[in-house]
Length: 435
Ligand SMILES: *Cc1c(COP(=O)(O)O)cnc(C)c1O
Image (cartoon, rainbow, N blue to C red; front, side, top):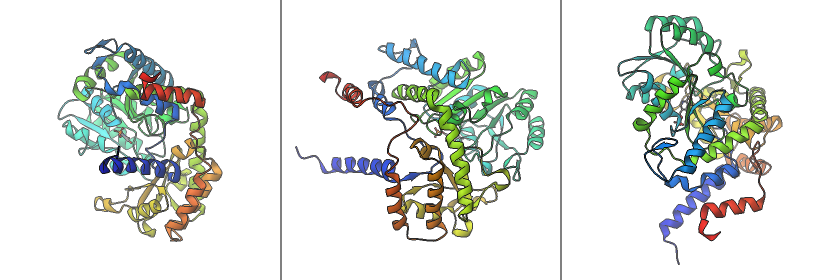
């Protein structure tokens, strides 16, 4: 049968995207990653068609005996990685995890003290995002630009003065750990909960390359499961106490999810097991790569943020490209060279700079997962110089990037299965009736 034209177009788009982004590009978007083939195969399971409202073994639907067991097992794996028994996996994204925590611990009209937007807060921490949608007021902590971190004394005073219901740490532009201990003490002294948004750094925490906020006084951790933690797109909430866990469990369903995209449980579990096996090695390599990348960019003439602090302790490196035409223009040129990045506001930018901010945010976690190490970081810094500083034709650099990518075609820090097992599993996922 001839396939309808529009169908061919759909197939083409998916093929083109996948080959381009997975095979020909260097991806430096700090919030993205790739799953292992095994996690992807199991992601295609029948649970994507099912509903499981309620908690494991206490559902409103039948047919879930395997789902219940898998959800509990995945909670256990993630709990072991995070050092707590209390993990809620039903939020389908980091944003939904945050909304769940806000609704669980605060009310309409309450205040939340958050990291300032220019210094890395996520939109879900602001009046424009879920915080605002739930009627909460965003109060920004002071930021110390020299330290590239929260001004601890100022933030403590602010918390004591404002007496918020919630304090939120963690962010999207995030190169140094926030001061959890001091802020937790201040929050608890006014009876506020401290929520730590670990969306970006979950994989560093599970790999023990970033401090675990739950051990330092944070009450609740929220995260996405697809940034430095290289799993399927999804969210989670981890708590220290059983009481808080129960509270969020009563809010996430029925308030923020109905089905919770059940097929991601298996992929999250596989990724969690991979992180138990290889996570420390992976996270340590991410930190080495980020540091090397920052230094190499500086050597190539880039203005890299936080030189006085050693540039970065996370997976991110931030550059200021205002003198080269700004973040928007250069992000576009880099895309034409198959180097994928995003423009970003820097603390000194004005709100009207949003269309062409000074900064570009870079993350090395996906490059690391493809097996790239220090030498490759130096090479990527050179490709970036050619485009941004030397103003070389991006299409020439693109050919070099495509050639370079040919050496990094297999996801690392992953469980490898035999070709036969892969085929067998794919057959079960796609055509269970044929076996
Ligand atoms: C990405 C991000 C989120 C939102 O996560 P989604 O899974 O995209 O909803 C929340 N908080 C921070 C700090 C983030 O960086």
